Length: 328
Image (cartoon, rainbow, N blue to C red):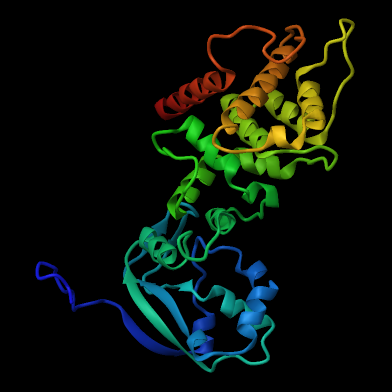
């Protein structure tokens, strides 16, 4: 029984309705839906759905009560649009692999008025406390980008840590993100991520999360100029260079040599190691940029004393660029 002070709610806008499969198949996908096309091909899901059970008929959806603008996609959805918020994988499986599908379904329909509410309803069914992994949430956050990122860019550690390092007020944690955090975090790094997605990634060197994190920060700190992009391209393509007359390597080659020669255990990522690893990559990326401006190569990591870590200098540059863009 509820406590005597509790308020019992007995009026809901929700309803349970029976719809035909044809009606169900026309519902829009949730705008942050994970990769249900891939999930429907996975044996664990196919085995679960191979034998039809009555509970498979129950799905959840939301209906817009008014026109709703989605700032993520730029689309205004008309009133009456119905979004599926639970049941995407089942629908994909029934459409493509099942020998039979239900003739009718039971839809738990809620009424919402904004796209934020659509997302909230989706996350109420699929979240990290339930069944959805970080990679699923990352896929959902980039669903509107009209491109599918490399698998390594759905490994969320580079994005969560880059956001935490550079925008700690908006992202006070580097782990434990929820659905809206992924939308905002991937949006913050969209331009840089699309660039990394389009360049060649060598399979001859390790390309760890700390390098990707540092690359995102370095690119944004330099406003994605051609020099910064060329430097990152060289690193990811494993394009090293020989030593100069003083037997010194350039910044990019120092990164590549470090990646090739560092034992796996020394490149392990956790809360204690992520910051120093990212700092070291930032140092050499910055050194490569200095060399491009005509400065001399340095002998080793930390070859010049600095009162402020390179990563922190990048964060300050990002803040300054952000302020200038807002002022403009």
